[in-house]
Image (cartoon, rainbow, N blue to C red; front, side, top):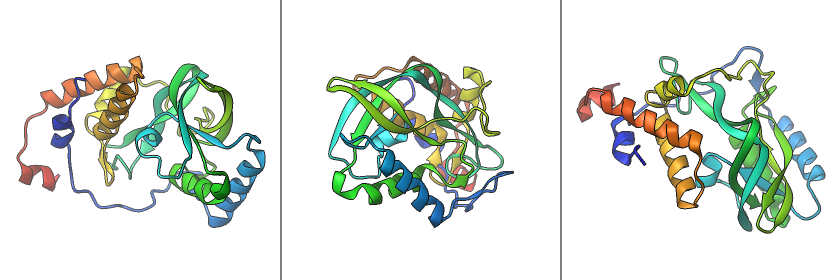
Length: 236
């Protein structure tokens, strides 16, 4: 990889959590909403188990319990930084981030996790709270088929709604890298997210050409930035 932990460290900043960032036409999801969505998904789950397809940060930070995991390929979907804009988690009002999502077309190799049958409700709630904070969501849960070495599965994932006002489908790789090399929020930088995702995929033998090119472009942009000392970095 061209993008390294040293590149990521250069972008580290101490940014406080600004709290919920309103988006036009959207409101915060309530507990009642989470309960309703969770109940619907559990009722729809295949009888052979509820599996979740991970393609980004859920691969390296699933934040839910699971009893099995497998490499899986989803056909008809691909990774894309197309969910905008993030003013809180890995971006801010001056330098917003753009989030990785599953978009139509191509194929995507990731990981599927099987949730424990005896704790579906608790783990689905944890997953929903992590992936959804507003409604109507730009990133709704849906069931898709995937292929694994153990056979074909119908799995739960979160995919981009192209009709949403948050869909950004026209960014070039160069424009995306400009964002990835600069945006930072209270959870960290976009470069950190990219580094963690690509490095974990490579460790599992999954090579995503799109992400590989982005990490090269992002590293080059960080290299071109003037170096700052620790005091300057913390003050940003």
